[in-house]
Each structure stands twice: as C-alpha cells, then as structure tokens.
Image (cartoon, rainbow, N blue to C red; front, side):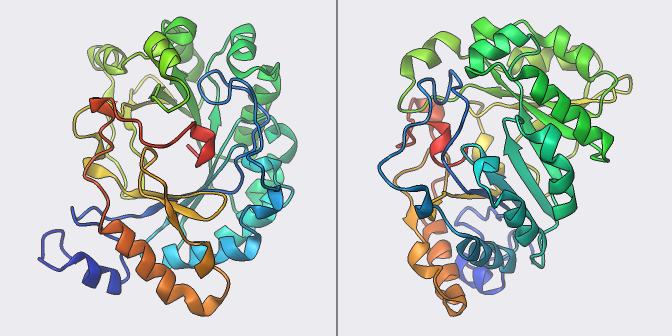
Amino acid sequence: MGEHDGVSALSQADSKQFVDRYERKFYYLRLSITDVCNFKCTYCLPDGYHPTGRKNSSFLDQTEIKRIVNAFADCGTTKVRITGGEPTLRKDFTDIVASVADTRGIKKVAMTTNGYRMAKQVDSWKDAGLTNINVSVDSLDPKLFHQITGENKFHDVMNGIERALEIGYEQIKVNVVLLKQYNGNALPSFLHWIKSRPIQLRFIELMQTGEMDSLFQEQHQSGVSIRNHLIANGWLLKVKEANDGPAQVFIHPDYLGEIGLIMPYEKGFCETCNRLRVSATGKLHLCLFGEEGVELRDLLQQDEQEKDLIARIQGALNTKSVSHFLQEGKTGMTPHLASIGG
C-alpha cells in the first residue's frame, strides 16, 4: 500500500494497518506493565514512587497484555517495548516477555530498565525471547550516578550491561538524559566508553512534565551541540528502520559503539512518529505528552472483542495531533515519565 494512495485512514485500518490522518503508520508499541519504580531519578521520581491508591493487582494481567499485543500485531505492529516504572519489578516479567515474543508478527521484543537486576536475570530474559535492551545510565561517575538516581547501584548496572554482551546481545542501548549540571560536559568520557563496546549511547533531551518545571529550566540542554561535534569529527547519520524509535543515530568507522540523539524540541520531531503507548492500567496514549488517554481495558476481557478494540484504537488515531507542541511550552497532562512508561 502506497503512502499517498488516497485511501482513508479507516479503510487502511481495515487492511490491517494502524495509521493516522497524517498518514503516519504505527509499527511500534510501548507497553507499560507497572508504574512502580525502585529508583528516585531527579528528573522523574525525585521523591520516590508513591502509589496512587490502587493495588498493584490493577495493573494489566498477562491475558490482557496478550490481547493488546495480538491486536497491535494484527494491525501492523512489529516491535513491542516493555516499560514501566521498572518492568522487572513484576514477578511475571519473564513470562510476559515470552508471551509477547510468541505473538505472530512481532519481530522485536525490547525493554527499558534501570538495569539493577540485569546481571542476575538477563540470561532468562534472553531465553524468553527478549531481543533488545535499553538501560538508563545517566553518568559514568558512580557518585554522580548515585546522586541522579538516588541509588548506589552503578556497578550492579554496569555488570548487567557486560553480562548482556557476554551472552550474545549484539548491541545494548544506553539512555542518558541530558542534565546540564550533571553530565552536560561528559561527552568525552562517554565516547571513550563506547569506542570498543557495541553500545548505542542515546542522549535524550530533558522533557518538561507537569511536576518538574523548575528542574527543566535549570537542567535542560539541547542535543544540537553534541550533533555538531559529532558531524565535525566524522560521524555519519545512520539510516532508520521502519520500527525504530525517534533517535538520530550516528556511526563512526573508528568506534564500535554508536551515538543516538533524541531531541523532541527540534522542529519536525513528530513527523515520523511511529509509536503508540498503552499504560499499565490499560489506557491508550497517542503521545507521551497527550491528554487523559483512551480506556481500552473494557475491551480486553474476551478474545472476541478484538475487532471492537481495534476500532477504538483506530478511532482514537483519527484524532491524533500533528505534534506534541513541546516547543510551544505545552506539557500535556503527563505528571512524570514513569506514569505511562516514558
């Protein structure tokens, strides 16, 4: 099916492809399975996790998760990223990975983690079918890592990354949230680290959410200076795959690792949006910085509801905005990144 063949969004959905009114196609589902996290990152949960009054049992169960993934896979999704909070806090995490990996049409099963359990458990995750891992490491200085995350787990996380590489992961992605006063000048040390390691280091611009206006003003740093440095030093932009995320990825012949830049304040950032989000309680979010979310859980109780589930998702997609409008100072209703899986 061509990009500009004049077929309406709804009829394209009937042809098993989620697509919005701007002809953006959605191959990538970010699925949160918990909003609980055991770290206290400065830019997300500086005061730690606080329950919202519901019990953890209200998070999507394995059957509901399977029905969501089936519906997305039946409409063109090829990549599922399991997120949180910290997804490995769920005791059934490995079973969830296996269920997602067993879904017809899903080619990539990824996760985003703080990495504190990787060293001990990554072998079982790989056996279950986990194909891609993103780990958050905001500093290579153990003291700064502790200061940013609230946890003295730097060496545990680094051991987990090394273990993942040992057992056959061809590449690990490491997420670094740019914080002006913490890691704003750390590019040389990060470049040294990835020179001989197959790590895609992804610098992520700090994004303003409802609970951190002052921190954003103090710590936001654009990725443009990093991009300029890379280009000036022989780094080349890598071609994206259809189900890749929003990072601009740069490669260099002298480096085994890669550098990714995620710059949501840059003009045109949303033009290639290919991902949707489902929260741990079963709400569809069209954008990380969108509004209240669309309830899906009532349509996850029986296999026979998939047609209605798909129709509701596509109906919501027909209202998806052209942009998140972050560049205009709008932050939507997202209180913090852990609330709907980052």
